[in-house]
Image (tube, rainbow, N blue to C red; front, side, top):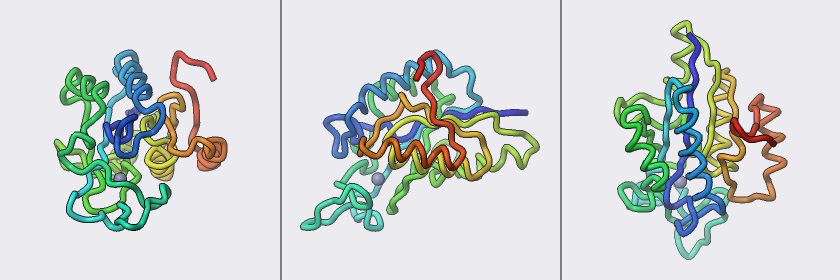
Length: 210
Ligand SMILES: [Zn+2]
């Protein structure tokens, strides 16, 4: 059996405009992802949506800049996505989608007490499954991955790490470029090269042309 998965990475309030670590274009990406899933969702066997889900009582393994140090926006960051806060909640567009899909949309959380960019490090909340094992299980069970699509925020951090991690597992991976937004947009051409070299296809979402 061949399987298709969609991974919606960290489309949370803190990563959208007005959030603690807002990315330009984040809210628009949330809207487009919801639309993509409403049109193409039936084509996926599993749809995961991750949340960066940090502890509020520690710097999460150096992930949060501790004053007076300033965040460097590469390895240290402003406080963001603290578990159970409004900032960690899914953006309303994706939250509405989650309501519509019910159990079809599987929430994954990552980053409790540690920096965690790749969704493969997370766990499905409802079942406790590790995402890396879930991805590894398809070929182990005699199936194949037809494709894993990765979308969300931010392109140059968690989308990148998730796509590279999934590609390492041997699955054909695509990043749907128009369903992402980057922290550092100047780095996008180099990032596209890096992903291509790793075997990740960077394409526009179905219905759009590059
Ligand atoms: Zn984080």
